[in-house]
Length: 233
Image 1 (cartoon, rainbow, N blue to C red):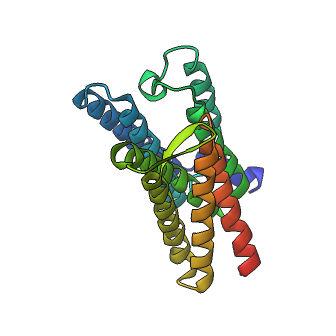
Image 2: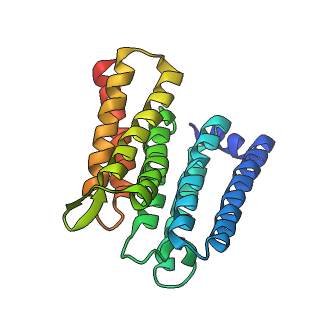
């Protein structure tokens, strides 16, 4: 996009409405998380996962509304700075206070910015795939593993559960196939790519430490989807 067309896009009256819609969604997610936190007696992990899943869905709104990528990158940088500061100051106590050392919130912000920078102008659906797998796959895997995980296993001192990993695989497969089917139909390449992405995302989630899965999972998922589409297409 040229500088002139970018400026026209940013100056468009409709863009203000689109940003308003995104802002309303984010405010709704934060209010929902706050309400659940109070209802559940300050359950920090539940609050974090609601925010984790809810805010990630903004990428669907941004894709649908064709919001310029530069705004997504700017928001990612700003949120990344805020999260770094929150590790030293109590800016986001409901999100970061989960009782473990993790940079997950920071990597969450960074991965969104990187994916938008890589794919938004040419193939935004790869960014959408990576972000949705990070938000829904990783988020639901943690919740399922904590509540219903009955078959634990350990990797590098981290305890996981087969129930959580299975959830990660199923959600990753569903998210990838849903996006690809909407764009290229039910060709065999769609299912091969979706299966490969699900396996890679599950493996990256299992082996990542200190919250870096919020970086490795979305970038790995998007990268595998892009590579296989080039190879099999």
